[in-house]
Length: 153
Image (cartoon, rainbow, N blue to C red):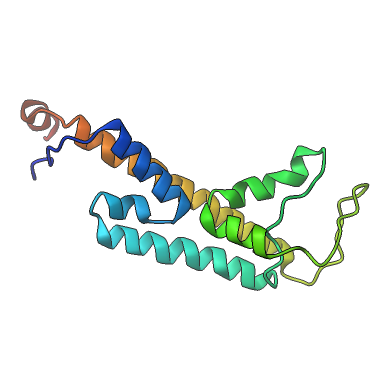
């Protein structure tokens, strides 16, 4: 069994890796030296995010000013992607205004699935951020060799 890398990571390193991983998909893994995983996460998450945006004609990421939580939940999922969501919110304004009474939109086909894909990409990125913290935790608290030998059959 390969020996766990013993390094002196601090809580600041973990926080920086988590923030980097949230802002740019895969950046937290890159910070910890996992280049292949970082590239795979970046390509998969950004591919899903941009694919969803393309399906929705690059109009599905915006914050709905509604008192109903249900109307804002999609944006919260998309916000998990970090910087890409911030860039789209700042550069794009929807070409329509939501009807507050019914929250129905006159949109082209693909808007709903595009919204779903971008929200899924944000949630996948949050899972990648949790994995970044798990990498930090395993490096900070490696299992003793005696416990590893006892766990293997």
